[in-house]
Amino acid sequence: MYTLSGQAQNSFGTYGTIGLNRIGVAYEIGMNFQKQAHNISLGARFYEPDLVFQKNYPGINLGYNYALRKGKKMKLLFGVNLGLFYENKITTNLWVFDPKIIAGAKWKLSDHLILQLTAGFGAVINKVETSYTSNIQTFNYLNYELALGLTYRFGNNSDQ
Image: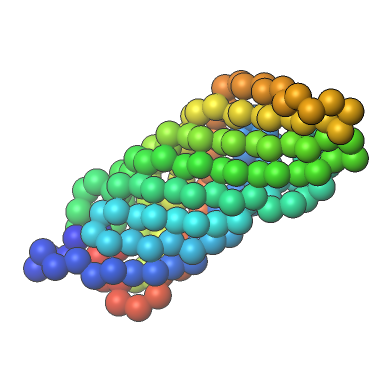
């Protein structure tokens, strides 16, 4: 994450992740920006249709993580993620908020490829509004996640 001279190079990358949590099986694609040990990501996350989602509409996932062990091929990371989803079901509107704290590791496979394994826990907040009444009901429950991702970085990434 830091270069040997102490001057950090910014880098951009694309990533894909597959994960499993209490909501269901998640697929995520997106872009990330990295400066030194800081990484900010923005992606589209899809959940398979299941007991929560009837259709495969994407949600937005925002993330931040910080990596430890500068100059090593394997780095430890910790951070936060926030997923935001909306689905219009026939008679109801569903909003899902999925904030998580994450920890994991990433391995530099080459100058451009990074493999990442993360675990996270947080809450799932479901807000449901029916068309019959104007009240909104909220349901909260504990969430956990295990995800495997692959990132491709553009440009010179000798110590990413």
